[in-house]
Length: 89
Image (cartoon, rainbow, N blue to C red; front, side):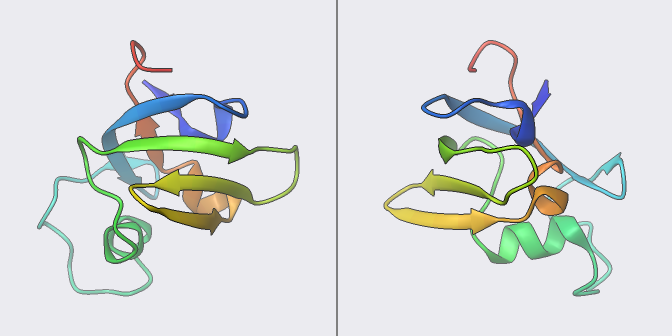
């Protein structure tokens, strides 16, 4: 598994997990807190099994990604919580 922040521009991969504070969290096990990174990512539409493409990844800058038909800008703090399967990058 590779954090989304490690993917280079143009790479596509499948989301295999979403971390919260360094711990893997299963979908639906949040505590309702909007300070929870995993909950925030799911509210934005990031779920396990989805394909994500990195459109731009420059050191120190937010990532520009494509998720389904949308382009989104993710801060590096949130993006590092998205795990991509090692066979997909």
